[in-house]
Length: 294
Image (tube, rainbow, N blue to C red; front, side, top):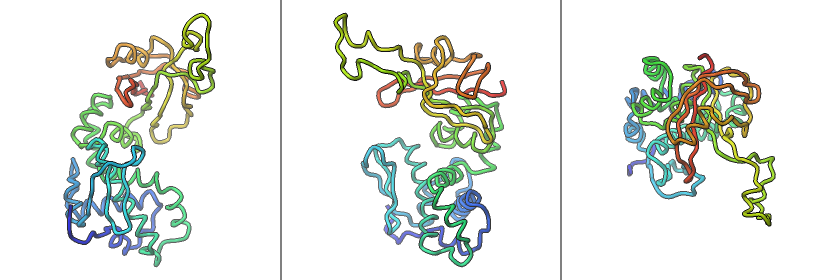
């Protein structure tokens, strides 16, 4: 923890008019923070940023749904129960929050239009996520690293390790920048929310346990990250058939791949799929890459 008075880097950044769209504004701010702290490298040395701006960063248990927050006197709190890679992204997110704090306090009043101000507030969370990714995985350093090998789950893991960030954050940044043409999908073995599940409501059954009346569970879409410009809508809870790479990865508990026929909302066709199981909330799930051009 730093005992000096914390500095909001956004105040100095906003002294120069930045007449650009909101997304470009947060990316410029991320670059300003990196360059001011001599942190433009991979992995980004977050300690340099903390030291340069005398940031007081505290790690303590928080509500499980809360990653972190920043107080009015610029103290940053991170959830001590999170993984280090998650805390790093949370810290970067909170550094982005300082930009919005400075804007609300009038640091850009001399030049920022009302339209830009409203747009910033309306899309704050999405812009903070984008800016945090820009801080941890800066262009063009990140793009140069990604281009060294064809995009795959294995290569994404190596990039994540090299950059000291989570695999999900790495893949999201790759897709956000349009560096790969694939869908990242997280799957859960579950019932559809539209199905009636007797065991879930404790309905009795004279012929055995309530579970025997339940409809079969399937591998269903839980989360989707799409590449820039992707136009097809993939709804949550859409399922894939048994025998697909996603289903095999869940059943066998090991990474699987193959060409599968998929019908996921507007996404229909045969695609090369990589799938790997992982555990979260004491439950096995599957992550997959659906390669759209393979």
